[in-house]
Amino acid sequence: MTQPWLIPVGGFLGAGKTTLILSAARILSARGLKCAAILNDQGGDLVDSAYVAAQGVASNEVTGGCFCCRFSDLIEKADQLRVLAPDVIFIEPVGSCTDLSATILQPLKREFAREYRLAPLTVVVDPVRAADLADPHIAFLFESQCEEADVLLFNKSDVHDLSAEQRCVSALTGDGVAAWLDEILGGALPIGGKLLQIDYQKYARAEAALGWLNWSATVRLSPALSPAALIGPWFDSLQDALYSAGASIAHLKLFDQTASGYLRAALTNNAGDPEVAGDLTASPESEHALRLNLRAVIDAEPLRTLFAKALASLPGQRFDERLQCFSPAPPQPEHRYAEMVD
Image 1 (spheres, rainbow, N blue to C red):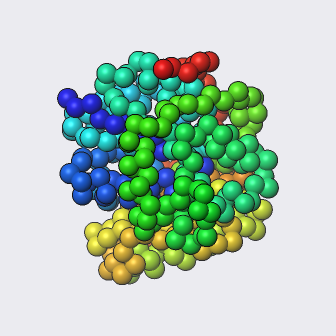
Image 2: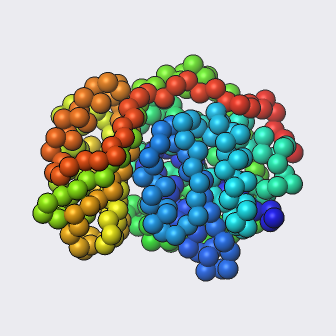
Image 3: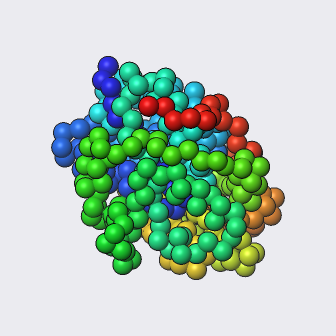
């Protein structure tokens, strides 16, 4: 089998990690390289897994905990993808996860150097999030992620004026992504070059402040509706309900797959308009496969109640419905290195 690159792409919820990975995969594919991705979440039914699959990128996922707590699962999923002979495997940790250098990068360098070539840790930054860190829990997680980055990458240059001194890209348009890839694969940057002295009790409290909700269902309609007509009004009503409850949205994602196309809507705050990807002109269909992932600063049980009320406004009949709603458990890494591996 080949010895693929592992490219870790971290960053806070909604920074644009998955969009960056897909943009990078298109560039590498045009260079004749085969790409894959491993996605990560505390729960199941991931919107990003469905979105990546819709783009034709081979993928795997580690669920039920972050990469650091399920390091063995990460290696198992990477080994499964390795059979497909990819040149590059992107690994995207949970958006609330930090201390990646000590718990993921150093173990990879020591134990799996023969199987994988490891790229520097890129942490993707949303400039709007960086400018608004009013919640102390979000601020702690965000600042810790930035502190340990080998490469700090400011995203969304297509909509924000960013400093020329910063590494900047637009994951959406692809601007700057090729240069970023050349830099991280060029061999000149440190890999896992920083180790955090992190307070794990504070880390656990920060993650537990977030309510985590993953939901999926098949919805059957009569009359048929297009993805835009179905999820647009419902997405807006859920956003309004969270605002009314005083629940600060960290990330809200909804994915609708039909026979005629897919639509993905994503939001990283309570007041903005969602970012939309997919086919807004897809034809009406009677069957829709929906996935929703929501992260908000609210306790799990009030979030569950709020979401149950929001579901009442979703038209159609629901089948094969699954719901997970919880606050993340305290992180318990499989490995945590106190010193950097050469």
